[in-house]
Length: 494
Ligand code: CS2
Image (cartoon, rainbow, N blue to C red; front, top):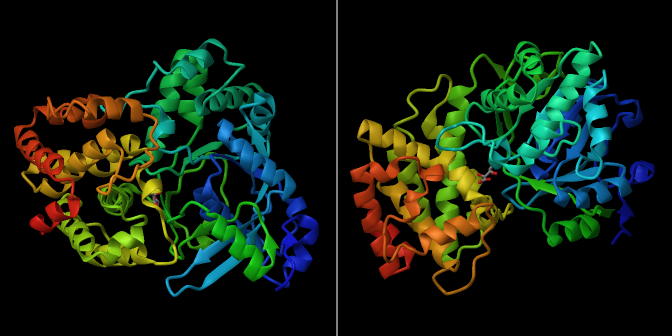
């Protein structure tokens, strides 16, 4: 066994004899992109695309400066400081093969929580031409029912009163854009990389709603100058485990405190409208199209919804991972039935895509036994995800008279999960959700009021008023509360 070498710029040559390392001069990188939300996904996706471009000798103007706007980002900040912002991406193939590679496209990282000025200065710097976002569904701060900006958020209220003390992405973006305008610099592009339909339009609508209250003149300038391309992003990126860190050290001789693991599949479909230039991403396989809408919808309603279907049912049954769910024939058949009978009919035709092939490939990706994507990652923040992934499909099918029975069982399972917080063996489930107190509060009234859970309007909209849905939902809830063996109910439906 080789003694592990600490991942750091000065050790790259030595590490290069073990695994691939950047072949480019990282110090010569300008910071062209500021990215807010440097989770595993960003490191497996956008930062990887840029790394590939740099390997081709391109894009030296497009180094990435990561930004952390949450306390929890301090861990990555510390690790990046020690590792010169280097990290290892471990691509895991279904046959067990792992391909690790050191990624060098992130060249800086700043914490906005502790000191906002360096972050604003970095965004307002002339070299910065794109600010990209992976702030999760919840980070957009909209009311899921009305689709409008949520001004009740106390952080937003604070930023409106103190424009020089930003907290959320909106406060930082307006502070930086104002400075650019005042300094006569062109605006940057705001590139959303989140799992939201029309993510760019959403970012635009929310930022303008905020800016209009904060500074009307600035809002007008943003509306004219800033491009917000929509984009569909895709790569399954599970949470890094201790075993991943040990495997990298023991089998490949690289000491990295936070490698990122992912599947081989990668996709990015983007609208080609940028305020101030962009990297030549098409050279590394990014697709530029005039309208991302159909691709986004397909991915959210099939892949992300498929994940939620397996995640919630799997959590109640006691399956720890997505691949364990797919190995269980009942789960696999149920998922396919949901995708075929409820999610696909509302998608219509998508030019250039064979939806049957797309679904086949999804099931293969979910089955990758090496990925071990935990159901807890999938179920986390369900209150922000399900309205976009699954509940939207219920609304669509109610409007067209389509089937809703598979999705309805998921909502009833989610209610039981939120109420009891344990699987069918009585093992506790850790629920990670910004709304978990409200979800629990509503769900626990189910025995006296079976519809209590779906009365949460910010999540379910007006579903409560639809009799076809409430009837099926009440039946589903009764079944699960009488017998929490979820698999039995699934078997009866397929
Ligand atoms: C997952 C996504 O968060 C979720 O529930 O469905 O993170 C999914 O893995 C990615 O969108 C894949 O591109």
